[in-house]
Length: 225
Ligand code: CA
View 1 (spheres, rainbow, N blue to C red):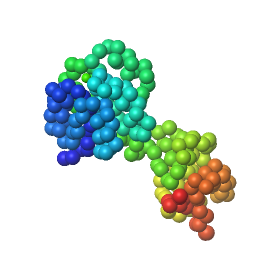
View 2: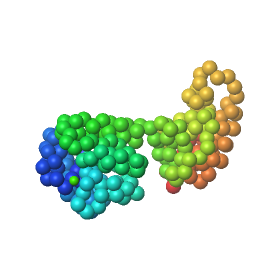
View 3: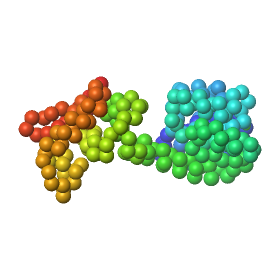
View 4: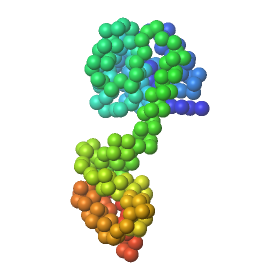
């Protein structure tokens, strides 16, 4: 029942051991590190699903550790804080912490928070973004990004690209596209699809290609770049 790796960066061994015990019991593989530097090294080598990060560490401050993690990763981070002023700093710096717990905390509460954060972040990553080459169709934010940069799409263009991106490599007829993107009760010419495809192609540029399939309709190439 391996549920993935959780990195625990905590210099107090009794707290680290307790967290380890509870998370291991839930099926997580737990890696413990007592300093910020060793935590960052483990982060790079093991790419954990989630990081439990103490704010007060002997070498680098937990907030700085989080900042360095954030430079390369969106891994969920739950902070452990010892004092009220630490909470203020965690919240004030907007480091992208996913949650925090104040010591002393109940290990069962930590387990509940870990599960909740993983549910939230995994769902967002797995279901709400369709990636085709350099193009990200972010369904949650209703946004198209090319190489991380948002590009303006109208609602119809967005839905059109989403429809094709969810079916990469498959030829879709104009009628199928009309039925899904415009709706079954829409009456109009199939050329409407051609006009919108032209717009979407222009906006995608070389990032991703939509091929014309003779006698059928269109296909989004899955092997873009
Ligand atoms: Ca500490």
